[in-house]
Length: 195
Image 1 (spheres, rainbow, N blue to C red):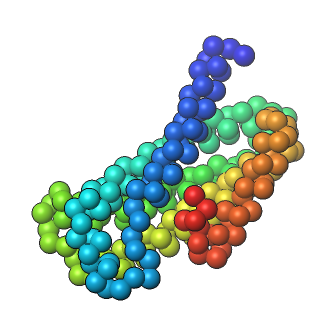
Image 2: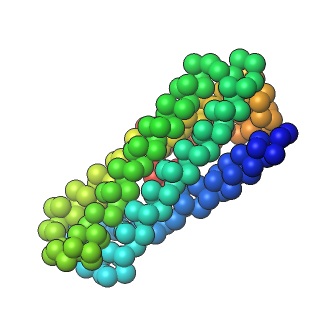
């Protein structure tokens, strides 16, 4: 393995670990009350710490999207060097990774928009309907679009791993196994639980 390949592998490994941490923090940093009364929802949004958490979540989500691009570009490079690895499955995995990252950037904006408006721009807190809509839009994007495209990307690259063995077979098997609940949760519109 050349020095350049070693640096690329190290960079992708670090990006992969940081992606996992960023995804966890993206979701864990914000816990808007679910199926709560209007009073409870308004009280949650009026809490200054919660508004700050939405801005933090915006950054964690953006970081996760960027890190996933780094990882998938490295994986695609590895796959394309393997016999049979430059296939439609690889292209599909890379396309779904792009869809995931694009959706995550929209998720980032929806996660942080209320906090930014109130804390940075000094606007008043929007009404209950806007707060519920913003939260619902966020969870729909994260739970269905982002997690669905992530699950499809994982499944496609796992199929390429199993066909070409450019990574260990267990990586492909594990990827297939992990993609099933991710896709199932996205179809059930509970994809944010898969993070």
